[in-house]
Image (cartoon, rainbow, N blue to C red; front, side, top):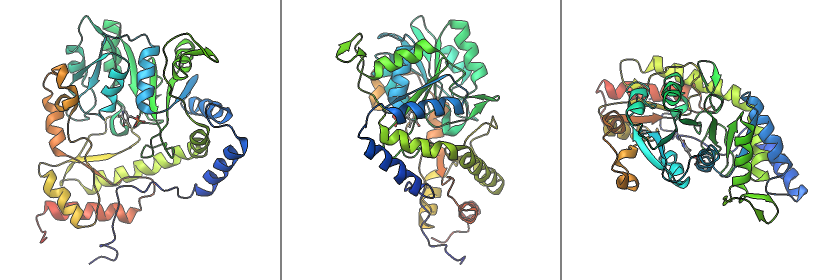
Length: 371
Ligand SMILES: *Cc1c(COP(=O)(O)O)cnc(C)c1O
């Protein structure tokens, strides 16, 4: 038995690591300032985050879900409008459409990349369609060339769901700068993580950015004067200060994610099928593989002390929450939902841990287990 084989290998470890001391300093700085919601840390983070992707504006909000909803509203999506979303994503993508008062229309995904399929998207367009929300799933950009072509043809707004894809690029262009706006989440598991909820809308459209700023703060033009019915969705100073500590580490951490992903692809060859990499701008938020024997594989890995998760076990068209929409069948997403298994992959994973995961999978696939 290899040394440390019984050691538990968690899917992720969200406790601050080498950045802990800097985070404490940032928190102390905010505590001493006595200013906690929308202030100088939020403004500085917004500028730094926009600059990191070469966008003109970033507007901090309370979550990724709110970022999508407010970007849609700011882009002119109204109640009754239809918004196309992919069937394989976090349900929050579609919940954000509902929060904006619009109706999600669920379309199937590409069988290789599991991002929104251009043809399925085009087929889902009706006279009421107003927008498309492609998802850069698992850190991989959706095929934006194809999606922008559909959007241009039908004069639709594109809001990119970048919640899993901070600083990813699509054909060299940073995600969040291709459509009218990009929506980001800083939930603690994301590539750029706060220690609580947080989100941002990125855009180079100054008017759209201004409308998000208005909407996130109750629609107030100035204190106690509400021009529109906005919401309370503000980024707080503590989270912004923490995100400012972490932003400079994002590119080196992304490089580590890509190294682990390359290792897995090589080491798992012939055993399980990783979701295809279509664009080298992939930032590997997750590393899902597909197996026809997913439940047994997951059980085998659990016995070996390796924690895995499923992203996502229920495609949107099968979620009871959206049954009222009578969504059309999405067979590609449905089959993927039965086969996907996400392996541990994060910047703090050691090469020997990744090797242990790969060995355990190879052992399972060779059928040489005696559980
Ligand atoms: C995390 C996530 C969201 C929602 O972000 P929150 O900050 O949790 O609201 C939306 N879409 C995708 C693809 C996500 O991964």
